[in-house]
Length: 338
Image (tube, rainbow, N blue to C red):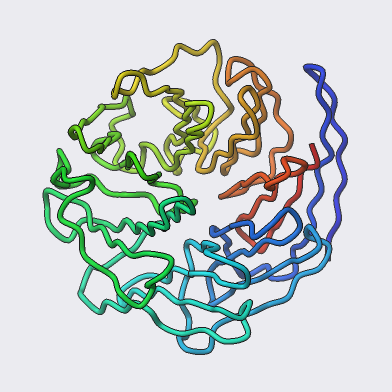
């Protein structure tokens, strides 16, 4: 195990960064979810799923035996010792454990050619589970829905909140880089795309809307992830071109939802390079990560401080807001104490 400590102080804030685990150097991690303030689960390639119950000091590997050689691009917690893991690609699987990873079962399987599931979102209030996948029809995303109370039943959705699903361009898709292409609660849904076009699709019972986002001409660019805080009505989108990790063009957007519409906010500066993951820490504090490293803002994204140039795919703040866990390629797991 490798440990690296780095203390940073600027903009009247300080953080301690450390690499807390790099044992599995042949594994790429992208899935990350907290069960409580000290326990979290991670998922990645080579059938790998891990769990820590002490804030990242130790890890237990709880790899499923019901499937082999899957890349688990996302993982979500739906209850105590109850997790869902999303495995790609065709055949695509959703696995569930109800005993903290001691045993796993298949709750969804799809062998259709071209099937690629990208992300899961669980809304604890409404108990809705929503999964987004790459288009199986040229004009709409592939959406699965279920409930935390009935995970054995999955429906292929044709609409969200009564609004038909759509994609403007048949070559739009979803980057499965951080399991954060969508947000769903009891009132609304947000889905972001990349590829030939990059758009935000917003669904409510009152209607569906699409917002075009600026991007480079490359089909490897666009939005990779989103985070939305309904309490503070604050959202962020992150992306860029993953083949150009140091290019900061169109890598960050900030928005609010006002009178049923997305309103984008002007920004003074941008984080450095391509970003795939974003986590909202408070009304003013936000952290982003990607191949170009980890950046932190304490003023809502107007000014940024680079914490490390180490590459990470996904970042998530703990429920008590005391630290952020990061997961990335080459088995790297990081921790930033706030």
